[in-house]
Image (cartoon, rainbow, N blue to C red; front, side, top):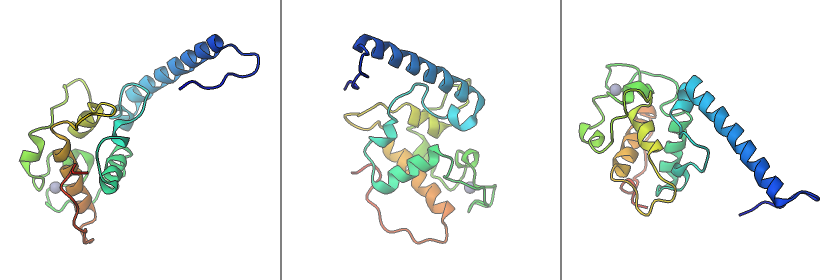
Length: 164
Ligand SMILES: [Zn+2]
């Protein structure tokens, strides 16, 4: 898909401008990823975020987006396990989340500064023909976190994670 050129502007010039703008934005993203914790959890290159296209129900996609935006778990509150506050960090070690759900997720390399969930989300590819093996486990983890955050809410039944 090419964008229309401005009057008097050659396609070659437009392409060069697009490359310069993309390079600038990519450089800015790298700087933001280095300086901001949440940006560090995002993908390293500019492009469509695969969580927008990966198979998920509306509620699951909402959880994925809220996780990326740090709205899930959101404001730290006491976790139902009573061991700690429910934070992004605690989610990774909360005893209420069944250990087997973490088995399919890869551990990020020590120098990445990404947590396991962000690392798994960053490993997604655009328009996967089939979701990765860890997809339903990751959606299950986020579903549990959403339920712990809204522990006073009755959640309606949902289809099995990733079964859309
Ligand atoms: Zn907990």
